[in-house]
Length: 545
Image (cartoon, rainbow, N blue to C red; front, side, top):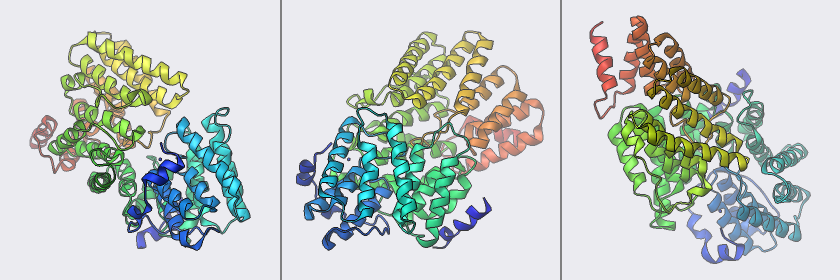
C-alpha cells in the first residue's frame, strides 16, 4: 500500500452502423479541435493518419466509443491499407467494464477484425494487437462473453510481456484485467494487479488519460477509494473534451462522501454531454448526461438540496429520446425518479412511479426497469397499499427469473435484493414481523456479497439501511445502530444512514454519540434548500443538550 501511494503521487503535481454507413454519415472534422488527452501509439499506417489514429485511441481510453468508432472509420477512409484502423474500430465495440456487446456489435466487430487480418498488420506488434481482439470477437455464437473476455485478457498479457516498453499494451492489459474482475471477489486481486501496472506507467506518462481513468476503476471500492483521489482530481484535466472524463472522478468522490466535488464533476459532465449532443443529434438527450444526472441526484439528496434534486428529476422526466439507448441511459431514467421519492421517504410518490419514457426499449434492460417496480412495491408497502405492493413484487420476481435465464446472475441477485427488501416491508405492514426481519437480513447478506456496478453511484436504497429502519420500528435501536454504522462504512456521509444512526444512539441513551451524529448531519446539509424534518429534529436535540 505504501509503495502504491508513492507511485501515484505524480498526480498531485501536475458505436448500429456498417462501415459504409458510418463513412457516409460521419466526418472526423467534428473532433479536430477537441482534447481527449495525451496518448502515444505509433503504427505503420500512413503519416497523414497518425494523429487521427492517436485521437481514436485516446477516445477509447475515455470510453468515447461512438466517437472512437467514427474516428477509426475516418482513418480507414484516408488509408485503406491501415489494418490497425480496423483494430480500433473493433475495440470501439468491446467495452470491458461496461455491458457486453450486443449481437449486432459482435458481428460488426468480427467483420472489422476479418478486414484487419485480410490487410495484415505491417509489424509483429500490430499483428499481435489484432490477434488479441480477434480472440474476443471470434466464435461469439459458441462461446459466452466471459470465456472470450478471459481469452482476450490472456492475449493482452502475452503482448504486454513481449513488449515491456509499450505503454499502450500495459494500459490495455490493465483494462482487460478490470473487465474480467468478478464483483463477488472481495480480495480485489485483479484490480490491485491492474493498479500496480498502471502506477508503473504513471511514472513515465503522468498525463496519460487511460492511466488516470483505469486507476479510478481499479480503486472504485470502499476499502481502496482513497488511493484514487489524486487520479480523480487529475483525470478531468487530462481529457477535458470527454463527458466521461469529467464525470468519472465522481466515482471516487461518491465513495468518500465528498458531495461538493461530486456535484461539480457531474454538472460539468452533464453540461459538456448536453452541448455535444445538441450539435450531433439535436432533439435527443445524451446518455452521458443522464449518467451524470443520476450521480448528481444522489449527491444533491445527501446534502438536502432538494430543490436542485427536483430540477434534476424534472429534467429527466422530459426525456423522450436518447442518443444511445444503452444501459447507462436506462439505469439513470429509472434510478433518478426512484431515488428522488425514496430517499425523501415520500412513499405514496414512490408507489405512483411509472416506467418512462414509454418509447424506450426497456425490454433490453430489465434490471433497470426493475428499479421502478422496487420503488413502487416499497412505496406501496409503506403507504398501506398491500395489494399494489404484491403486484409489483410479482413483477420483480419475473424480472429476476428472466435475468437468470439470460445468465445475468449479478443483476438477478441485485433484483433479488430489491424484492426481498420490499417484501420485508410488506410483511411488516401485515404484522409478520419475524418474516419481515428474515427477508431484510437475507437481502443485506446477499447485497454484501456484491460490489456495486460502475453504472450506479450506489444502491437505490441500501438494504442494511432499510434493515436499520426496520429495527428502529421494532424498538431495537442498539441493533439498528450497528446496521446504520455498517452502511456508513461503505457509503460515508449518507444522509439517511447518518440520521438513522443518530436516532438509534439517542434511543439507546447514548446522547453524546447522538449529538455528534446530529452535528455531522447538520454540517452535511449546510446548503439545504428545504426544511427537512430530520434536520429540525437534529437541531432540537442539540438545543436540549
